[in-house]
Length: 135
Image 1 (cartoon, rainbow, N blue to C red):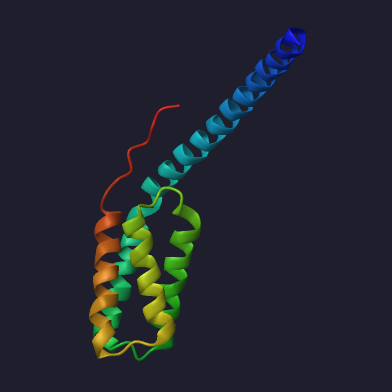
Image 2 (image 1 turned 30 degrees about the vertical axis):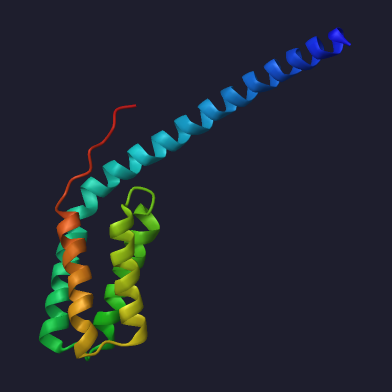
């Protein structure tokens, strides 16, 4: 009976070693991907910020009557969400979600201020540079 317990303990020790090694490899890969995304974000953030500033200005100037402005805004928000969701804060993701919902459901004078508030938050977010971690 004692030999079986020792055998089970040995097998569990070997399994835990392999699981630890796999976890180490996976976490290193995730860390490299996040570092790469942070570097990419830092190089593209000003372009994203300028695009959102121009679209926000178009929203106010055109009173959002042009569907091409809404389409361009949605495209930029989807692009950001797809590319940087792993390094985005929950608040940033919430503002993207809210802006997308408003543009999908139709924009009127009541929710235009909410849309611009979310865009303002994202513009402010893009002024912050991500701190890249050394690998």
